[in-house]
Amino acid sequence: MSDVNSSLELLAPAKLNLFLHIIGRRPDGYHLLQSAFQLIDWCDTVNLTLIPENEIRRINPIPDVPPEEDLVVRAAKLLKDLGGISSGVEIGLKKEIPMGAGLGGGSSDAASTLIGLNSLWNLRLDKATLGAVGLKLGADVPFFIYGKNAFVEGIGEEIHEISLPTRDFLVIFPNKGISTVSIFKDPQLTRDHAPITIDRFLASSSLYQSNDCQSVAMRICPEVKQALDWIAKALPESAPCMSGSGSSVFTALEPKTEIAKLENLLQNLPKGWVGRIVRGLNKNPAYNLISSE
Image (cartoon, helix red, strand yellow):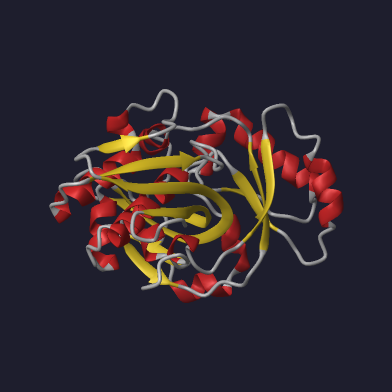
């Protein structure tokens, strides 16, 4: 953070879906889900600088992503309109989280933009209001605004804080993104998983390996199965699972895991793949530089 009155640099963390069940569908076509979201220390960086011009200026834009589809630009515009702000903002984004990986990077970037501009523009909007704005951008955005690990229901807007143990995870992105729309439009997608309770999830480690999107994703994107098989071979006692609608896969690491040996194996991933050992977070670090949080 440089000048607290005019600029902010905020981290935007990724998340893992420790499980993902689709329990139904609303009349408007949106899917009803249950999931547990775990924040991890794999982060993008969002830079926000206020400018006097009445415009939203995006520096270092993402190739092939037009401004009208860029979530940080859309987030800034929504908040600017809501707050009646007549000045503007310059937005920089350093991407580390792979796109199309099921790790929520774009949603987290949008949430950090809303969190930061709420502070810079001194709007004093509460998290519920910011979450309602975020939901217009994507189902995962309210979770990142809420900022704590959570059991999530509905279309992503019903957020219940949960306490999760601090754990390390192995995450593999097989360098092939999957369209969320293609997953959720697939006729073979399970849409009637029986609901579970928060207590049942917290008491059952086997639910960490349950994702209703995984079988469809493996058919659409064979790299998902290849990544799952890679983890299973590297860690035979693990139970790897896909995160979200893919294509990243992960497994929780046991305390006895030989990290040095695993890091060695990661040096020999297939070309283009990305693998990281990450740690679970308890709070969205985007709030760490904002004194009111």
